[in-house]
Image 1 (cartoon, rainbow over the protein chains, first blue to last red):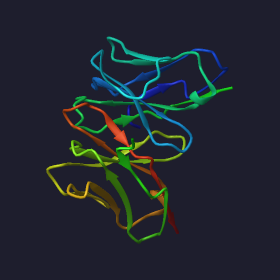
Image 2: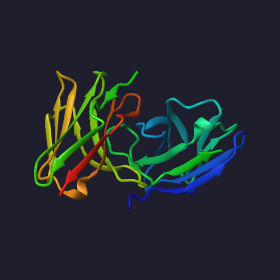
Image 3: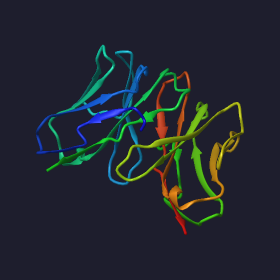
Image 4: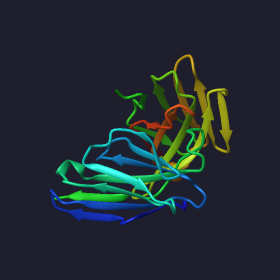
Length: 114
Length: 113
C-alpha cells in the first residue's frame, strides 16, 4: 500500500460530460502529480502541484484542470469528454517535490468514455 | 519527442536467470533515474533509483546501472522469480530543474517457471 488514495476506481461516462477525479497524497507529502496512461502506453505527465501551487505542466489539455486544496488533496477535472480521454489516470505524491525523491502512486482511476 | 525510451516492449526469462531491462534517454539534463514495477490493476510501485553522481545502485536482487556518456541505464534482476513478472517503467527527472518525471513506455517482463 503506497498510502496514496484515488477515488473513484472506475468511472463510466458519456462524451461531452465532465468528471472529477480525487487524490489524497501520502501523509506528509506536499507534492501531487497527475499522469495519464492510455491503452498500452507509457505514463504521460499532466501536471504537478506543490503545497497548493501549480509547479509544472505537461501535456495537459485545456479541457482538463486540476487543483490542490489546503488539506493537500488534489482533484483533476476533465470536461467536454471525448472517446480518446478513456484512460487510466494516476496520482502520485512525493515529500519534497524537488525531482530528487521517488514518486509514490495510487492505484489509479479507470475512466471509460462511451 | 520521447525523451525516455524503452525499446523492448517485452522480455521473457527463465526463473533463476538474470533479467536485464534497458532504458535510453536523450536529455542530458536528467540527473535522477528511477525504476518502477507495475502489476495489472495497480499503480506503479517504486523499485530503485540512482542519481547521476553514481554509476551503480544495488538493493537486494535489483541493481541499476547508469552510463551517462551513453545516456543509458539498465535494471538487473538476479535471480529472476515468477513474481517479478510485471511491466517495468524507467523514469527520469531533472532534479531541481523542472520537477517533471518523464516515463518510458515500459517493458513487460515474463519470468517462466
